View: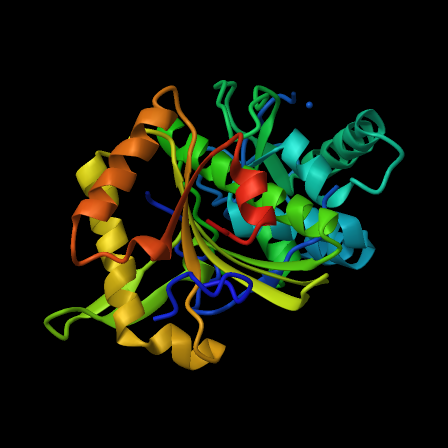
Length: 329
C-alpha cells in the first residue's frame, strides 16, 4: 500500500551467485551501442600435455585482477555492480543508469560506449550474441552485456566461480524489461523530487507461510519505495511490480495475485513497514497488452478471495502516470 492512497488495501534460471535476501533494498543510482563477443575467462587454464589449454589470449590472472581493482574508476565499478544486480543490460540502459549526468542523451551514450569498450578490453564484461530484443522502452537492438567471471572477481574480491548460463530470448527480453521498469521508477522519482529504493527479483523476495503452513516464497520482479514530499505532506509509495510480456497464461497471473493476497494476510510485511502493504502493480507490454489488462482485471474482481484494491494495472504507456499518482484510483 502506498500511504498517499488511504483507499488502497492495507491489510527463469539465474546464476546462483547473485546476492539475495528479503527486504534487501538497494538504492539505485540516479537516472535521467555493438561489440564483438570474445571468449570468457571464468576459470584458470589447465595445462595438459595431450590437450592444449583453451584459455583466451589475455587470461585475467589474480595479479592482474588486483591491479585492475586498484585502478577501477568508481563509475566503472557502478557499471559492474549494475550488471551483477540485473544480470543483463543494454548499452542504452547502462548509459541511463550511470552516465545520465552529461549534457544530452547522445553524449551520455557516447561516453558509456567508451567505458564499455574499456571494460570489455579488460575482459570484465562481455556482449551476448546479436539477438534483437525489446523492452518497455524498445530500441534494445544495441549490445547487451553481462559480467564475466573476471569482472565478478574484480568487483567482489571473491575467488569463487561465477556461473552464467546462456539466456533464452524469452528470459533475456524479460530481464531487460525489468531493467527498463527500474529506470522508469527512478525517472518518476526524479521528476517528483523524490528518492527511490529498488530491489530486483531475488533481493526483493519474501518468505511466508502458505495456507497449509508450508514455507512459500514470493518473488516480485521489482520491489520499490518512492519517498518524497508534495503539497499534502510527506509520502511513501510502496510497490511490488510484475512485468508481463504476454508469455504467461492469465490463470498463471491469477495464481501470482493469489500469492500476493496470501502474503498480505500473513501480516509479515505490515509488521516490517509499520502497517502498510505495498500495492501490486502489473505492467503489460505486448501486442495484447490492453486485452490482457481487461482479462486480469476482470478475474481479480470476480474472485471473492482477492481484494481488488490491492492491485493496479498499467501498460508501458501508462506506467509513469500510475507511479506518479501513487496508484490513486
